[in-house]
Image 1 (cartoon, rainbow, N blue to C red):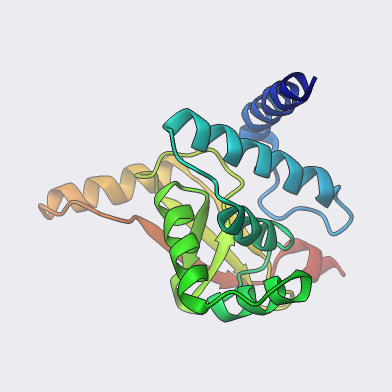
Image 2: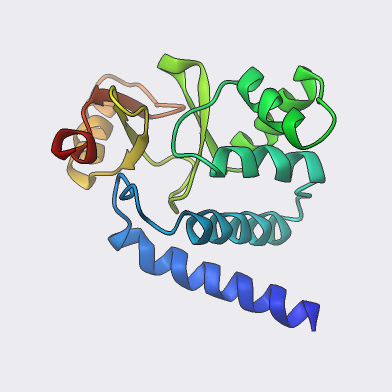
Length: 181
């Protein structure tokens, strides 16, 4: 029975993930179904780790759950503080190790300008150009992609004989929800 529920959850997460690639808004509406959003992302993380033969250990799962609980970037010490509310306070190195695993597996991103992390809820390759739109009002981070921007930057890098390792762009501004609210 549990296997059926897990299989159904992963199938639902895969279906949701593939459907949502095109339709997922860059910034979710403030009243979106956040429980489903985070549940689907956790199911996808479990599926990807199992598929790759990786272990989503309890501490890794807890760190990811903390990040999935918000669309705002959190620093490692903020993550430790949030974990301490529900149980023993993990050592910062434990949180950093979990974050490193999650980053290596494409489950979280580091927002360099904030020295913080955000859960990845989009399905893209590790080499894909990621554009982070960071709202200066509410602090939410949206992931956007553009084939045109990717092609232009890839072309410019090749012309310079440069191979990007981590193609990331961070743009600050005001999200539509804050502008309209």
